[in-house]
Length: 147
Image (cartoon, rainbow, N blue to C red; front, side, top):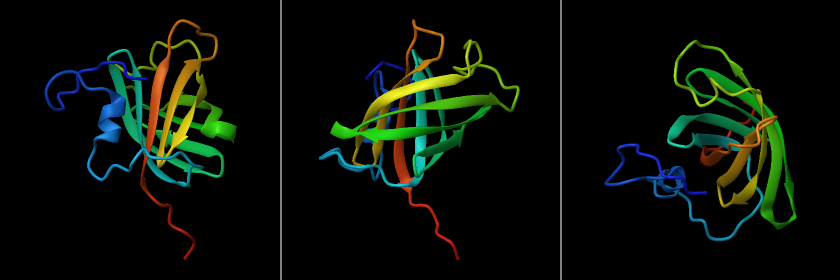
């Protein structure tokens, strides 16, 4: 899952995975385990187009968004540190150039792996079989509990 894209970060092509895994205070990828609840950096990439945002992941649910879309969905963890799930997207602002603007569907089917503090997923819009969206969630904070 390392499609090249140009983000102006460092020299040469950079991948979404490189941005997450080489970022400051990035957790180690040693050993996979169950994903904890928290606030996650969210990066979606399709070709050279990238959407950056935030996600709240807790108890098998994902809620998040970026500049013109929000999404919500569910996931299940399976043996071998793999996960599967779906996200449904809704447009809330009329901003151009989203990777979801020209998509036929609004439901993204996900499959991937859970590593220490990181989800690495591939998604495909339901009804579209010719394109893949690469998704990475990296934990940046725990959730706040009740007062």
